[in-house]
Image (cartoon, rainbow, N blue to C red):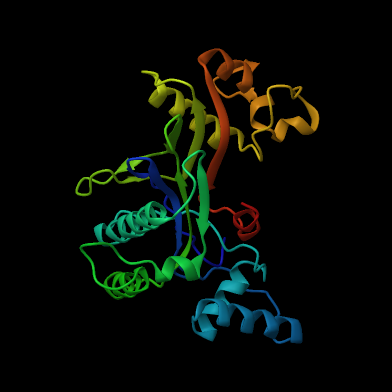
Amino acid sequence: MSLLRSLRLCLVARTGSCQAGPLRLQAPRRWHTSHAGLGLTSASGKELLMKLRRKTGYSFVNCKKALETCGGDLKQVNCETDFVSRNLKFQQLVQQVALGTMLHCQHLKDQLSTYSKGFLNPSELSEIPAGPEREGSLKNQLVLAIGKLGENMTLKRAAWVKVPDGFYIGSYVHGAVHSPLLHNLVLGKYGALVICKTSEQKANLEDLGRRLGQHVVGMAPRSVGSLDDEPGGEEETKMLSQPYLLDPSITLGQYVQPRGVSVVDFVRFECGESEEAAEAE
């Protein structure tokens, strides 16, 4: 059982050479009241109660019930949820955040000779304009969505990637759900962007990018590595030396090399990932 329900939608939005996604929003969970047994009268128990109260804004009664349910483990703050993600109002908010992130990416003044990648933290996301058809900032849109949905939510983080000619952004969303009313909106529990460099435009780049994204989602590498890395041991965290997800008899580097594409970077998001993992990225 967890204290909070984390809602994080992986989304890909694309215009030209700028791509935004995935992004993360978090919503508190409705409390479950099962077993008791945690001593909350002690000094440590009261400290936990106050900490959870400050973190969530919930009443002391609900916080006490949640702590009893979870055995006082404040680290259990992330799990998957579906009920809010199916709501059109929430999907519209996700779309606004993604488009706002993408517009932010497009307006950046950076070199065109190589790719750019960045992350937006909660305060940065809050101040981004809501878009050409919306007034105010994303913070304003978030407040409106909270009022309509009755769920307290916070903007957590978003990623953006921008590439010049000669680069390609592959994307993959696992468990993808397409919104029936919002075009180009893809929601899912895992998402990845893979930045590739190629000397010429190839017809199968979209399929190749999707396969590379599948590998990133499934194998969770920590770095790209190089084609010279030997498989096994500590190298298992390096993408190119990992067994290729769809054919473990070869490494990912062996799969990519004959296709004339170089993998240079990636972004991976996972629903329910820890705060530590998000900060490390």
